[in-house]
Image (cartoon, rainbow, N blue to C red; front, side):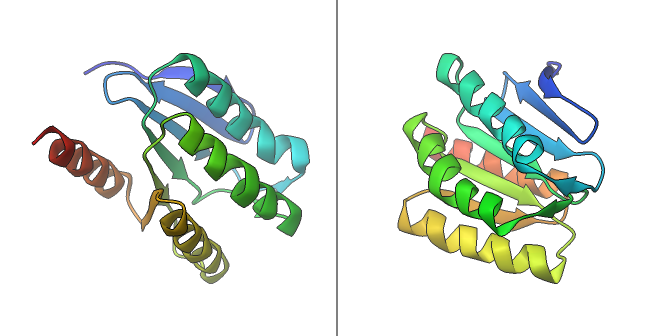
Length: 142
């Protein structure tokens, strides 16, 4: 199996690219209050990377994500999802611990994604998210 390449990392998040599967993974490492720069930077790095590389799938593990302001949630909805679509990212898996507040927000993202023809699904385990992406890829190849 191919190693994942780190494309961005700081104290609270790591973003990796898995070339074999064409996946960018974003994993929050510790909870903290996320200001504009600390929240946006990993997504902007992922988007910039996707401009020059084959990326079709996105996994975001938010189980350790800190507090995200309404302003940043709005930015994610209005900027990140449309930009991901422009760069051929086909779907996103979000791994969460099903915290009630995160679940509410993710359900809003799923609804928005559906309206934009961008599939988003919520999982509680990385392995389940990866199986979902693999099944989507297998269906495309058949």
